[in-house]
Amino acid sequence: MKYFALFFFLLTIFQTAMAVTFTSRIHSIDYGQVKQFHIVKFDNGRVGFIDYRDRDLVRALDIGRKADLNIEIVLDEKYYIISAQSTGISEDDEEGVRSLPPYKPSILKDYNSALSVLNKMRRGYTQDGQCFNRAHVWAYEEFKRSGLNSMKLFLFFTNRYIRTYNFHWWFHVTPMTYVGNTMRTLDRRYAKGPALTKAWTDIFIQSKRTCRMINTFARYHEYQQNEDCYLLPVSMYFLIPRDIERRDLMGIERDQFLQKDMDRAYQDAFAIGR
Image 1 (cartoon, helix red, strand yellow):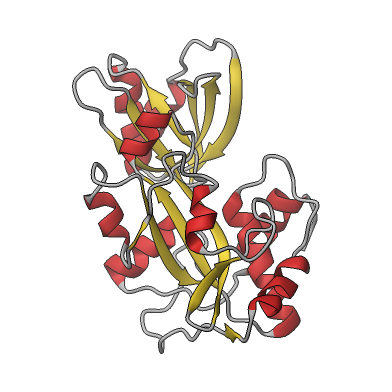
Image 2: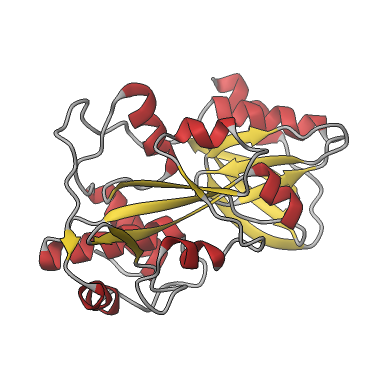
């Protein structure tokens, strides 16, 4: 482990014009075909690109992924990684339970009820705050306010879509609730009202293709070249895709809003303490 951390720490790529700097764990790396750039997917939803000829950087980032390191990343204006430096092993623990009764989402009676929920959502979000932190605060505050058991709806962008449109994210997430049997997304930053799923995904999907609904994260991994996007609904307690993977692979469910998650979410999304 020390060897991995030291090797990764010493790797610094020549820096040109800086566009974005952030710190995150690596979720996965998609290795391109012949002469295709590689796609690095981070836990915070961002992606970074690597030139296929830069083998040292690929090797170092793969070490960082396997060692579960937090990494400070600098991207240039085209979102290619120009600097990567370890900041240490992630301190996130593996909280959760292995057996829970089925989650029962609330069902609202009509559109206006959903609109009332959306209109009460906190505004004043930070410019660079992450979508999953906004969604977590919004879901948490409505649960505390009215007892609403909302859902989260994850929108996953495929490798094909990212490469075709030079897209800079690999997922987006928003609170969602049911109005009768119909899903209504509650994304106050990007939608004016409780939107149907197709209207919501059209905000982000330039091709306007329909995003298929899936129920396990593995389905997203398996069909990267078939679709542009996928939708995966989970309970309001799930924060990032890594939580969904733990549920699918190990049966570990999230059943509460954890204080450490809420503290980070409020600070990142709204620059305030809980």
